[in-house]
Image (cartoon, rainbow, N blue to C red; front, side):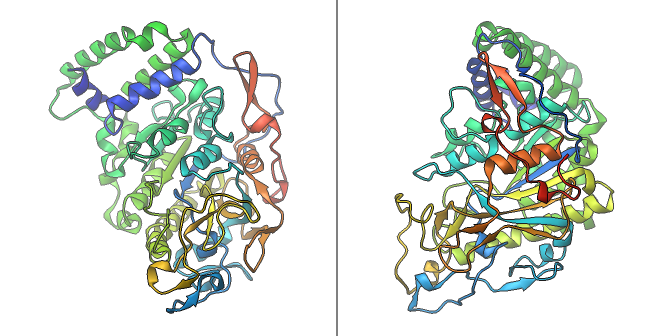
Length: 483
């Protein structure tokens, strides 16, 4: 009975994962009290009320998207080292700024956003996607002595819900049971020591979102409520309920109450994509990611605080272009170009873009020849031939952690603005205005009204929202300077 009830209460979030995640969050802070603010962080006026993170999971090649270089078409016998971009560049509505072919729709809305070409991610040694994604989403390189919270959890905890019936933090598109790096992905898809109530509401497939917010059609309301009461009793009697700290037990109970309240709320309609007009749905419908963008728009309209939509990380698929990179990148651009653009236009048309921060980012960039950072010796994970003889050799197959691109719309950021520069020739390193993860996070948090040195006390010491509280907001990116 318990397994059936779990499916009815938390469809899209497996029973095993829900209990594992809840237990992990509890045990990570066992015996500790409620996380309290440490010190008195500076007060910052928020420029945005909501955030949508569009996560290009797997390593989006910057030279194939937002930082195109010299284009060299494929031909058999072509030296690999001669290729910097496998797509020609195209004009955008911003004078002098070009992006890659295949992003024609985004080229038409770039005047609404800021393009950063000088994002530098962490130097973590051997490159593993889940480790770099953990670093990007939490601001801390793994492993950590405490369970570091996801950025969405920090925002949910610090700012609270915009609509109490809508989960403050919603995660769309990632299946966490993927095998090889599953545990690594689960490690940061959590609120950590902040407590279960601030963790993500998971929706693996946007088409299943509506089902995750209502009881099974095979169970009547009376029977469902009876099962809900029994479920609470079972959770209270579980090892998590008996041995966790008081705060973590209470946080878990509140997370269950929040989920139950959503089931009876009119706000649940925001999760139902079948209610979207057909013409509008088609503009987004490039697949799961496109539908996720549509769902994110509907959720922000309904009062969500933080929504992440991912293209999904699965090793050797999607943006993880270890082979046949050109063809794979072309396919990914078809998946993301139209829905990201439609999201920006829809938010603008509804008067929501100025107060919604939309961030397009990835864990690192890519290159055909360089693995990691120039001059750094790391294990090469792809055998790229010196001379290409097949189309599958043509593409950005190696991880490049020296430089990547980030696009930001709304939230008080400048419009039609280009920031940072990379070299025109390999290794295409950053030559001006580097933006580290710490400083990018500080900038994002500042836009949301959260000081970069805000910290919560855990285990009698401060845990800052940017590493050691030292992240600095990049003032030049804001339309009217930093708050």
